[in-house]
Length: 75
Image 1 (cartoon, rainbow, N blue to C red):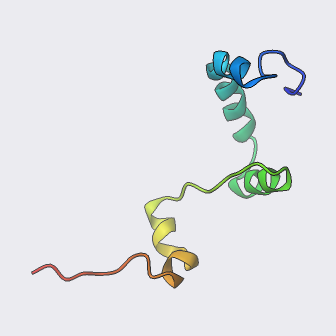
Image 2: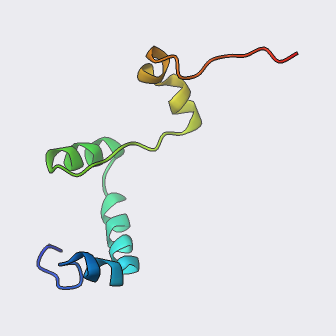
């Protein structure tokens, strides 16, 4: 619905209407789960990535497989 709106038609126009656009996106995003948002963005070629909590990060299989978090003894 926003594609034809002149407030959001160009990069410059979006910048001038940034607060309003952010509020609209926030309202829209709150109506979906994280999985739904991720699928929608991927389906439409919109770059996206999850923002995980610390617990989710520590439990992420990809993080574990890459050994991105290690335990270190500090004496």
